[in-house]
Each structure stands twice: as structure tokens, then as C-alpha cells.
Length: 344
Ligand SMILES: [Fe+2]
Image 1 (spheres, rainbow, N blue to C red):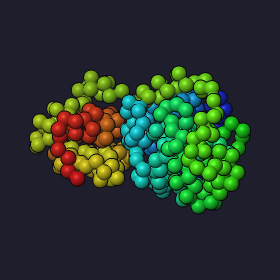
Image 2: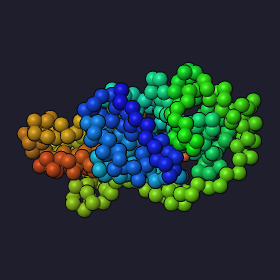
Image 3: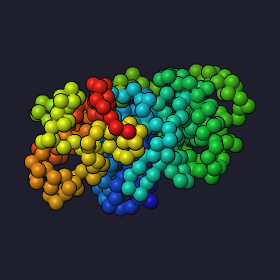
């Protein structure tokens, strides 16, 4: 496996780059905006294709690199379904799998530091965001933080993992890079409590100053969505209402770009083909399945995904490949809101 722990000194943030092999797909956890050029350089050097950029939670101390990475690599942006961000391409919940080629992470919903905090677990390690830090825990005094929920997330979820599980946190302010679950259970001063009440008391007594970047970072991080208006201005978008009238038309073919897990959980628009977003360049290029379908039938490709981000980027790629296409603005969420039928 390719694994890199990357550091942003001004915010003491760790970001993590994961891939199963050179030449393969990559995923990045908690990228920082100012470091995006560095990540892109590293991706080129390691011959990796970034397919997912993931935030463990809505950050208050740095601006996320999610939007910039998406704009520059067309990757999928991922956050919790609880996140109050405008749009991310894909939202995950407890028990979901976060997958790229050869890398398979379990999603653990671990509220407490914020109400959208998640941890991501790979076989021998867990990326804990700001839920569990090395000899510390993430503060719980703003952004819908909740010390009692954090106690549960740590004690009932993270500390149930095997002792030897490596802990890779979202920050470290002292220069530590990695710990283990067993080590944190024994030596993390915040975890030497006998009850949730005691933990809540401990957290209440911290009296921390707000992060320097908070007033800038939180609003900025809530607006990471892809600008779908430009796609609409070019006539490449369909509203859910327009789509309701045209699904049965013989000259369009509907294409679902989401992953299998999303299709199973949220249902699909009846009659749509499944072409997962990462396979789109291959499929819409010369010799690809979608390319052949569009050319041989003359049908217009109508892409959709969860919220319209992946589909908006897909339209751009399909138009570049010379294929007549548009997308469902707002994705399946807009379709459901307009009363569209879904098949489970
Ligand atoms: Fe945080």
C-alpha cells in the first residue's frame, strides 16, 4: 500500500494519502487548501489518480482542500450525511464503506467533536479526525459539539477496536505522528475517567480560546459545492420537474453515476443504467460502452448522481468527448423532492 502522512504546520493538521499501488486510484483524507499544489505534485510523482477527497468533519481551524481538489482533478468529494456543507458529491453514514481500487475503509459515525464527525477504519489503522487525538481528544464546545456523545464515540466505538490498531489523528500540536488504541486507552489523560459524567465535567472545565481561523474557515468550508450554474447556463442541465416529463422519452438514456452502496441505500430512478463515476472516462471515450451507445442510437445521455456534482462533471467530460448529454440538476435528492419515483 502507498501511505503518506502529510502535515500542514500553520494548522497542525495531518492529511493522509492512500492508494493500493503506483498507477492506481488514490484517496486523500482531510486535505488543506494551502497544500493542494503539494498534493497534486505528489500524486503526479507517485503516478496516482485521485478519485476521492474526504473530510472527517466540518473543520474550524483550516480551509478544506476538497473543493480545489475536485475542481482540479474531478475527484469525488465525500463527507458525512450529517455535514451542513452546501454540496459534496457523496455523503456517507455509519456502516458504509468508503472504497477506491484496492482500499476499503469502514465509516464510523463518531459525533462529539462536531455532530458530523466520522472516523475511517482500514484493517490495521483508524483515521480518527478530531474525535481521538494522541493523548488528547477534540474539543466539544462549539459546532454542535457534545462531550457525552464524544465519550460514547470513543469508549463504545474506538476503544472497542483491537489494542494494536494504529491511531492516525487529524491534528497533533506536539509533533507526535501515530499512536495505538491500547496506548491511548492507558495513557491518554482524557480517557482516565470512570463515567460519561466525569468526562463531560473534564471537557467543560477546559475553557479553550476559539481557533484563530474559525470565523473564516467554518463559513468557507460550508460552501465547497461545485458550481452547477455554469453547466445549466450552457443548456446541459435538466431540473427534476423537467426530468419527470422526459424519463419515458425514447430518445434519452438515463445513467446513474453513483456507487452500488448508494444505489442500494437510496434507490434508483427506474430504467437507468449504472456507470460508476470513476469508470466514466473509459466508458465515454472512443471504444467505451457509453460512447458506442450514444453514437449507435443517437440518444441523449442524461447523467444523475446523489446531488448533481458528479453528474455535472460527467456532462463536461461527455461533451468534451463529443457526446450529446445533460444532467439532473441537484441529483437524486432533487428528484425525490419533486416527487419522482425511485426503485429499491
Ligand atoms: Fe476539528
